[in-house]
Length: 165
Length: 264
Image 1 (cartoon, chains in turn yellow, orange):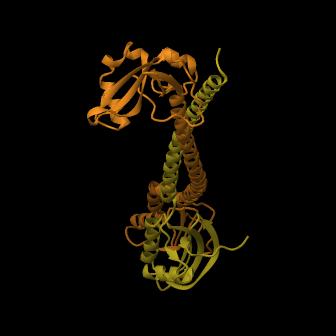
Image 2 (tube, helix red, strand yellow):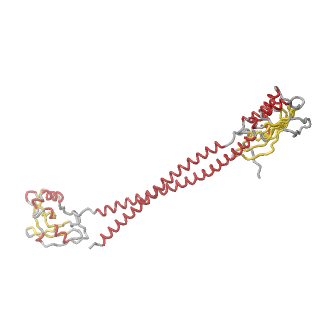
Image 3 (cartoon, rainbow over the protein chains, first blue to last red):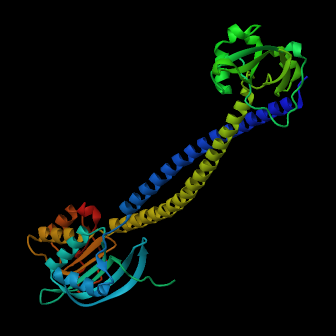
């Protein structure tokens, strides 16, 4: 006949075995879950890096204007003057968001220019097509050989405060 | 091999046994040390024991000095089976033997002490408990690591959502920008001016030039000749008939639209 103490010892041993099995199974499941979570984390971090790169690549620009330096219309005035257009007046007619960092500034500039300067403006706009769009250009010939011009540009700019809608 | 107990539990109540069951020998040794005496007996157990040593338990008691500076020890022998019967729980047993009519009390270890089999169950249980503690610690540690990884995963998922939105916005803006830029190619102005100069064979006289929606429209200062019209048509320009908006325009063709198709 098995004594009480022996029964207790066997019971304790059995209990320990059961606990060991449970802990072992749980450890195995945890290890598996940890491996899966780490793998998923790696994938997610790679995905985040890819998205960051994609966002940088998809971003338009570079911006031609920086509103923190001077008003956009003044900068456009200088740009057009550099191309041979005498700008008598320039004004911002609209601003719209273009991504998280930039804005598109619509600028209308009035002035005068010769045909060469107009051609230069067109080529400049084409060369900077990622940053500026020549919306409209109107040139009316004058008697002195120059033309009165109106140039409407969409220019990419940074640092522009967007109007609250 | 049997080895006697150094001390019995003070609470134990050693059992008394009839003297016949304990075989007693006297040996003289040049020492007073019980430990050395036991060692000497252990070395000579084959000779001293009245029964097979493997089946015999023995115990040593100091009797006192004898002749020649030696000391006399009494060695009591008893069969292990008797010890086991007297002490099933393995406790020490006190047995009395006789040597020259002198009663000598010997203390024998219980069967459960010296030669008890190793209790592997207890050892395994103890090892299992230790292992369970280690496993529990590992469980807690991995739980902690899982929590950390999950936290980082949540943060990374948030970053992914944010960047996915930013990438989508950027792609949308870029697509819109490209769509606008594609329909408003400023190079059309250069193309139109070039075409007009080419047809005129030199600087063209243009009263007005307008570029809008990607299309250039030129108003000539003078009525165009048939050759000039044909030349402009050949270059892809489309004459605007009857749509003259300039007051100076003659009824003849003098307004041309030059679009992307002409400037391919």
